[in-house]
Image 1: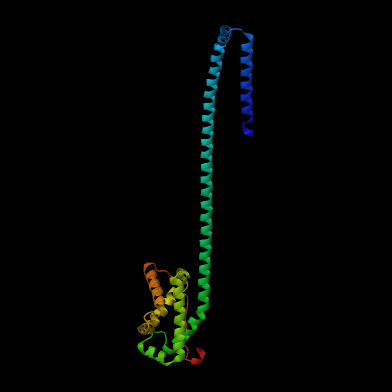
Image 2: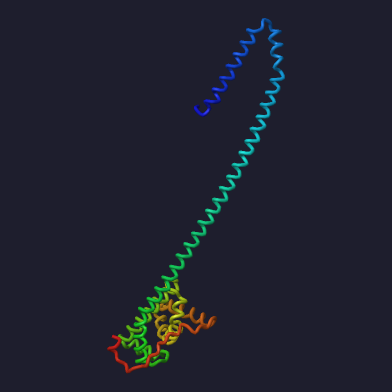
Length: 250
């Protein structure tokens, strides 16, 4: 109500003036004819004010149209600003995602290196035992029988293959960086798989799932080396066989 108070006051003033003017005209003239003649004198003035009112209406329409245009322009600017803000937010999110992915990739590579360092002593121990017992050749069926007959040697071979299987699970499930493993020890892992393939096949006769992850990893490495030969992944694992001594690996 307070917002339209001035409009109400203006209407009351106009009505009051009209009433005062009508009373004054009525009291100033004795007959209706004189009053009518006096009223006709303001016909031109009424027409003029009617024209002013019509012009005011047209002007109000133009003002409203201009206001609508300004609102449209403001909405367009707001839309563009929101679009820029959304684009900036999307760009910031992409940057954050790329940063997180890069950090994850770095951590995965570091975890791969740490794991490779941790298991290398076990590989070296197993390699020495195999070299001492069977030389550098691939294991034969006779060698498998010797391993099965020697519990200490059997335990060591299984331990080495178990660590290699765990490494392969991590690589095949992308917990570890497979390319990093290939670069660090790809050729060595291929050689040790070929050397122990007879033992692995004999283990799979008893359990078809034995060392399947290791086999899959080596298959990928062999295919990668076939398609893109790479001199890396050839860490020196040379070792000169020594006389067998079971106490060294028990």
